[in-house]
View: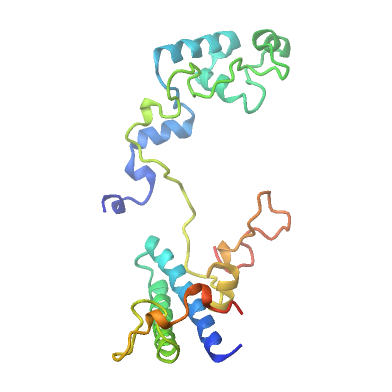
Length: 84
Length: 165
């Protein structure tokens, strides 16, 4: 697995964790442990997003970090990602 | 929102109503006149009127085959004509048995919130590592159950040893 795929996998992993704890927090909005878990995972996820998008282009429409060129349309579409 | 002020359905709806349901005194029949007559007919035929919950006994016991009124199987056969001797002689889809009204929304339940359920309190513990969580489809060990249309056969479907309550 190359670096790009490893990074993408990490994003999937932490995205899932953030979604899961978000669902839990919907029903337990004051759970300190869950809030801390959410904060940590979201922080890691943000770093991963930034790292990935800086090297390989935007993952979402909000991820275009380049002022000189709009890269969203030139990046692979979801169905163009290699499943491996 | 308003319902955030309530922790349980008991706090939201009338306590007496809940007690009525839990005690078995609540009659979920539709209340329509024809339904009432049908129920009376069933009750009379069945002979369960000696019990306060007679109408419920008659209608509900089609699940359990016997009405529990302690009358003989012969009595039930005669009344119902059914091979399994059940007290209920009508296979109605509506609760009240009249077949005309929407017996699934009896008047007594109007205004009561739909789909309110009890669930054990979920504690934030017994977490998977993030990578394992993605593989398992949940971050919570206690929510990691096999999706199976049948009862658990592996013997590994309870929360023991999963590190969660």
